Image 1 (tube, rainbow, N blue to C red):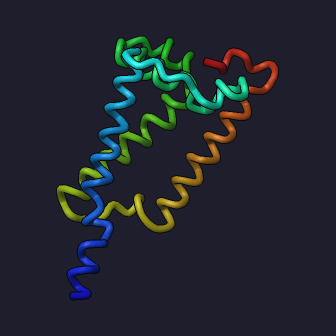
Image 2 (image 1 turned 180 degrees about the vertical axis):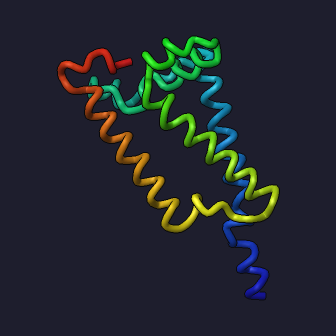
Length: 139
């Protein structure tokens, strides 16, 4: 019985849920980037400061229309860091689900390092883009 319980709670058994969640987040990003549902940023609404992801959905919309310069102008951080990390996460989750082998960067020390690096970069970007003199970085 303990073998069945352990198999049911292993990371491999949770992979389909992770892949569906990542795919759903990507679909939500596409809907927001199309401008069908205007969703204001809660941090911008409450404080007047841009969050690290402000302009990200508009950046995705510009990218889908082939306007790379506008995409960089709207949110370079989301284009250079968030979008590739999201795509890599979705690919790694799907590979784990299909092949049954856990991806080494999703778990353990490499996963923690990657998550902390992205979080630190988001914090730095969020602070820098709100500093006086960096108005060009605001969405």
